[in-house]
Image (cartoon, rainbow, N blue to C red; front, side, top):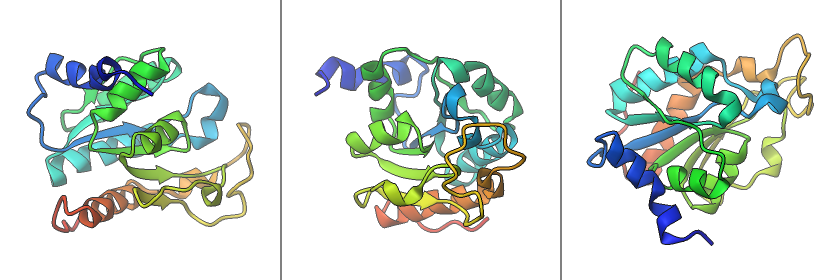
Length: 192
């Protein structure tokens, strides 16, 4: 149970960035901490996704992640052609939940952001690589994105010549975002 102050923390962050009137806020958490590097969507694909969300949907995009992902998220921001907002990582789970609560939709790897987003009943696009998409229930809040391959569900943490996460494209995630928003009557279909 989060306090009202914790739930509203993200709105305070948005206000500090001058984003309190943003219409569609999408949080992108494309990492999964140092322990699960094979869950990461590449920096280039993440930047492309962020650019597409801004350009095609007019979304305000927040780059989210933990302390271990700060440098990675700053690099992603620098690769973006559109303006995306880097959100300084916080160490409190409750405060991070407040940031997620400010989002209309969350795009996340199988990570803490996914699970907290589900607990907050946020619209979700979850992508999977080395962990099982079949073990996660989205409760009608979103879509799972993964590619069938020999390494799907391998549960390896690193040191693998390739990962099924590499098969995912930013277009796969953008299509899932469109679909989730359509299901919740947020947008009309936009074609790439």
